[in-house]
Length: 407
Ligand SMILES: Cc1ncc(COP(=O)(O)O)c(C=O)c1O
Image 1 (cartoon, helix red, strand yellow):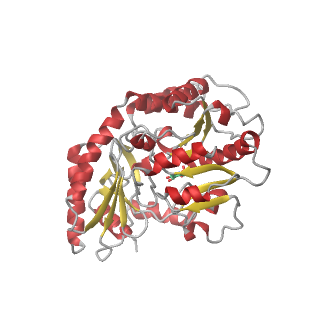
Image 2 (cartoon, protein in one colour; image 1 turned 60 degrees about the vertical axis):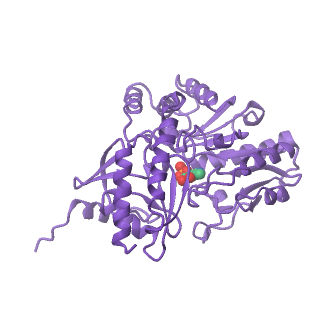
Image 3 (cartoon, rainbow, N blue to C red; image 1 turned 90 degrees about the vertical axis):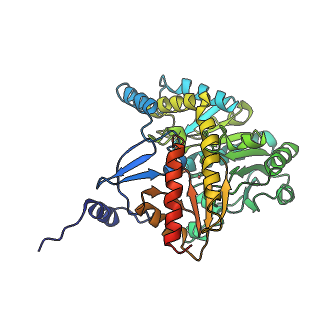
């Protein structure tokens, strides 16, 4: 007897069998994508309202980014940092300028940028601030998400991220996000840095009170502590400004960037800071074979030029206002709360109707891809090229899905 299996089922079965089960994806198998749309292996189309956690801010296969990638593939892709390439200097110069800083440390994944930022802060503490060896502490926020390495999960408050992975890296203190008084209390003479997401993404798009980040900035300056802003998910036009910190006129000492920096094509991340800070690194003290490779650097330069034009920030602000307005209209019809800035919305649904995961599945069946965060929260973070009509369509599908679930 022949059992007919569709392409989606077959593709998922292969992944289940041979890929580690460290994710629990929705049953959608992408085969191609363009702009804000993904087409699956069976020809179904979906409006992408996740944008690979903001890595595809400029749209799937953005033509300017893919043109750069194609051209660079025909030139040189990797030499390691043992030699120079003609692409690294222009990329670092452009990114430093975008950030208003002196220097760039190029890496690959977001977690690597965070790890690198922590190392830089500790070295700065030892060499510039004069913190005795082994005593440095770094303050983080409860419910943070900065990645998955051992050191990073060492200061996670998510038990699933930590269980079984000890022993952990010491030297971190966690305080409630949004509470400047708690932060002030935690700072001591050995504090070298405060590491924060300006808006907490994985925690559910949590926007802090308006006086929080300015207070963090002032406390860091007062106590000679580095303020590190993890803008890996919030940065590069996602919230309507170049950086989420810009909403409050705050300039951190160190920016951590990733995701969208690689244009949705390559992993590219960076630590960006002034010379007094990044200058603490000397040859042999830190590195990565692929960090700053010519392909990534060329793509990164194009991404920086797209961001420097400002149109994606304006688009995110304008379309974001529309998205938020449309989502807020569903309050009371299955939606409990809507948070966020720009094209980044965390939506709490009534937990009596469905979990976030169940609602994401219902939406995928209706052609809209979103991702749940914890519990009954959904995040909407579409590519910034999404149109008002597409937003209306996605929110309509959401309204129907909520009604089907019994709202
Ligand atoms: C704020 C933030 N920092 C760091 C990371 C880790 O990035 P990556 O998954 O590229 O290691 C993420 C990923 O979601 C993130 O949202």
